[in-house]
Every structure is written in C-alpha cells, then in structure tokens.
Image (cartoon, rainbow, N blue to C red; front, side, top):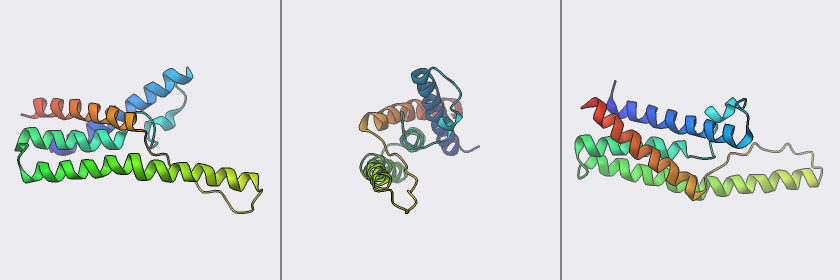
Length: 140
C-alpha cells in the first residue's frame, strides 16, 4: 500500500477513534457509535488526515519538495475551512433551526454540520504529525 494513502487512513482512524473515546469518557457510555464517523468535534479528523499525509511526504520526499509544498498548502486550506467556514456555517445552521422552531415555521429545518474550534484542529494536527512520523518509520 502507498505510504501516503496509509498515512491518510491511519490519520483518519486515529482521530475518529480518539473522538469516540473522548465522547465515551465525557458521557460515561460507549454506545454512541456515530462518533466513529461524524464530522466536527474533538479532534479534527480532517486536520489529522491531511497533516499525516503532508508529514509523510515531507519525511519521504523532502520538506523542500514541490509535493510537500502542495500538501502543506492543501492542509492549510482544509484547516482554515474547518475553523472559519464550516464552524461559521454550522453556527448559522443552529441559529436557523432555532428560528424555524420558535416561529413554528412549516419550512423543514436543514441538517447542521459542525465545524471545529481552533483547539480541535490543533489536536488533529498533533495526531497527524505523530501518525505521519510513525508511518514514515514503518515504511522506510
């Protein structure tokens, strides 16, 4: 398997697994299996995935390579989107649902996808860095 795809898969699995464990510890129940695949929450799986790939690229191909530059740019865009765009649209969705409920509107409320708080993205970055390094070590 490609080490880059392995890094993406492992970054996603590690962060979604951490999200499940954190949620289970907070709620005292391991029954919410949705935490294994939902977006939003602690840590950011999007951030962990793209950072794990970028780290693997940097270690294998060099941090001055064009491919690493592209991966770093892509990771930056994904993380910016998670904190700024998705978080903002999620907050707007919450307000819109509340407004529709309070006005007893016949309009069906949209589903709301959460974005991330900055600390959730940073936790995803940390997971991605570790996963990328471990994937590098096991695939050299």
